[in-house]
Image (tube, rainbow over all chains, first blue to last red; front, side):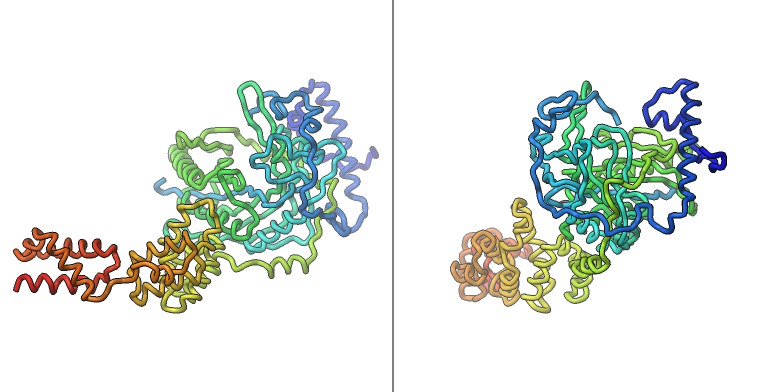
Length: 98
Length: 484
């Protein structure tokens, strides 16, 4: 990090930890807050690079499209092979509530 | 609700009718398929699998956007919408956020009050459907067959002011989707799903109130019911000075009430960013214009044609444009029958012919080939020139429907043509009078209404084939002779 890096964009470490399902101690919170702040400051600095006009996804001819043709799917046994748990052809996970 | 106004906006998710999924070649017709048999590394989100967009899904979305009067963005891109829930194997949904495929446009709806309004549209974007979850108390089961099926999300402006108007919007949208052939629009199958945003404000207020979202309404009646119930609830809260907290609610069809699901303290943090696995979607301007040129005449234009060129009423025009096959059939029949016969032809279609079609729902649009338009026009002409009575013509139509024969042929084959000769009817009238001496005596005694019964008996004796006016005349004369 250079001393001239622009200030880090604001973020809420607790909200990010909740989204990432992380249970942080007070010490970890401070450590990650500082580290993430550095990362974001660096990215903010990149934004200042003179790359000219362009959309968020650059220029170019565009994505190659696929004809609407049905191809083979996986055999179900193969699709389920690496599942942690299955039941009657379904993937099975702990009970979920929205 | 007195003194309050309800403000409604609707987000619909529409499954696009394609053979394969949005980003892979797995079959998209998952109805009836065994669970997890239409899956591959792409739609299961296995590491390293790369998506390739389905050209037909993009074409369908562009067609829909154009039909809605929206503006197509010639250069757009897909984005990742990140959230953790087992219905997404990848941990994100490929969607569009910053640059939707289409913006603006509107949809004309006719509210319950018969007034036409245009509901403005905010955006239409492409995304993929999620896996189907089956919840049990001790586990959740996942079927990824639906995962990756192409979806359009169509977001309206908050332009609706009642449950009826919301319902009319959804009906008009479904009609258009089916008209264009881009979706089945079947709400009961989940091919068209509605999330409703609703708020209330005092009449005259211009700012929007705090909004409540009611998710996954799967019928027109549910959308209307949920809005009406929620509007009452919110107005009551506002009346009592209670604070409305932005939240998501569900609709319980059984109790016909909404219930709390979750409170939204802030906008969901989906951490959208451009999908790095997909270069931007670039659409050629000429290709977009070709799609615009290929649009069929849309329901509103077809309705206008029926009222202006064929002099039908708004109601008749609405009924005859319920779907594209019906509209095409109606115009063909109107052309075959010629000017002057349009009201009669409209009546034959929306009455007896719809009744026959409704009795055989499995036919679907195939009903239009059961009685060809020119054959219906011939039938209408035989009624107009007095060859057939209306009631006989109904039977003839049924026979046309089941045998494919023409009206004139059926009429000639049996004693179905109208009996209008006074000699033939005179014999029938004499028989009826002889068989019913009591009503005859009543009539002679001054009870005028007895003649209606006798006329009914004459019609019955002729199987409805008597010309009613001639029969009445013959009957009146026969009765008068008895008085003299």
